Amino acid sequence: MRPIATIRTGFPGKFGIPRQSGLVPDLKGTIVFNPEFRNTDSLRGLEGFSHIWLIWEFSEAKREQWSPTVRPPRLGGNTRLGVFATRSPFRPNPIGLSCVRLDFIELNTPEGPVLHVSGPDLMDGTPIYDIKPYIPYTDCIQDATSGFTGSVSMHRLCVLIPDHLAAKTKPGTLKALRGILSEDPRPRYQDNPDREYGFDFDGYSIKFRVPDPDTLTVTDIRRIR
Image (cartoon, rainbow, N blue to C red; front, side, top):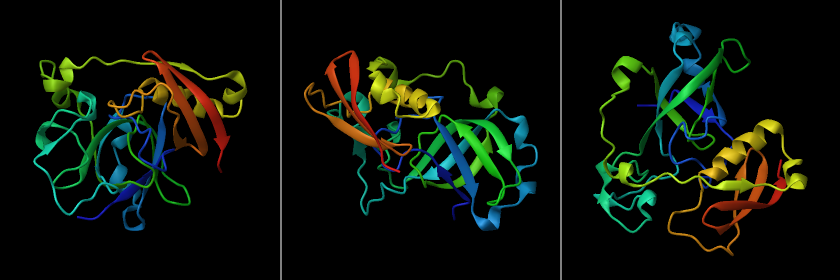
């Protein structure tokens, strides 16, 4: 197998990336095909679908050895479960699967056809091995059960960004950033209210603290490129 494309997102590193696709719909990404796959015929009919599946590689999580159990962050990083019962990046084969919204397709660009998508959970430059359409009547299973994920409540944080820091960002960046931070990008086992966390997103360095269980406060935003 070989990659057919790469995705461009605002995440140069792993920290801050949503834990699942679609959690932050304001996040944007572009899929650029590798030269040998820049054939517009391969996309014929794709414009009729609102969502697509991406099959991709955890390119920054490769390991020589694999473990049959992992510690899901959603369980606080303290409970071990079977690797095949989780979506951990540390797998026998580092393959990821994401469903994203297909916003629109640009067929004629200097880099060939480009797909514009929303809600990705991929790092910038992630190799993509295949793209398939999302088909609601088969892919949406109404009575599906959610295993251990159904027993852990989703908790969104109230995000406070001082006006003078918010003014440093572009409107689209700010909206997506609020969504990212509301999902609490910290590892679940870290809850030090005095610790300052940071990550890079969309050309900005973001710093924040979580002073209480319900509130995240951005402490600094700086342009890095």
